[in-house]
Amino acid sequence: MKKWPFMGWLAGIGLLSFASSAADGQAFPSKPIRIVVPFTAGGAADILARIVGDKFAEMWNRPIVIDNRAGAAGNIAAEIVAKSPPDGYTLLMGSMGTQAMNVSLYRKLPFEAMIREDTAKWAKVAKAAGATAE
Image 1: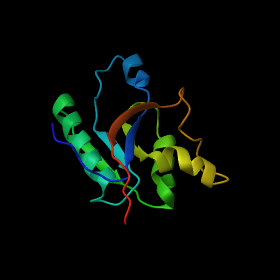
Image 2 (image 1 turned 45 degrees about the vertical axis):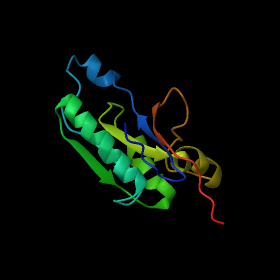
Image 3 (image 1 turned 90 degrees about the horizontal axis):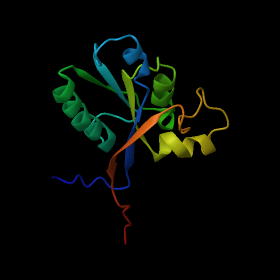
Image 4 (image 1 turned 60 degrees about the vertical axis):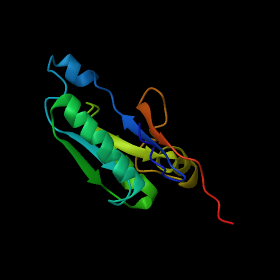
C-alpha cells in the first residue's frame, strides 16, 4: 500500500446521512456523487478527493464529481455541503481547519458547524506528520 506524504494534513470526509435514499427504496447511489473540496485544484485535499472519488466510482459504478470551492478558509465549501440535502450525494473533503478551527476563529458561520456527531459521519482519509524547518 502506498503512503501519501502530505505534510500537515489531517483530512476527512464529512459523509452525510444515507437514510433518505434508503427510505425511498432506491439503490444507493442512483445519481452522481459530488465531493466538495474546500481548497484549490492540485493540492493535497484535491488529490485525496480524487483518489477516494476513483475508488467510489469503481465501487458504485457511478460518476464522482470533484468540486473545488476554495475561499474563506474552507467555509464556502462547508456551507455548500451543510446546506445540501442530507441524502449522501454531497460529501466534504474537510480538514481540521474547516471542521474544528473555523468554529473558534469565526464569530458567525453561515451554517451550523458540522462537528456534532448527530449531523455528520466521519472517515479519516489521511494523516501526515507536521514539518519543521531548521
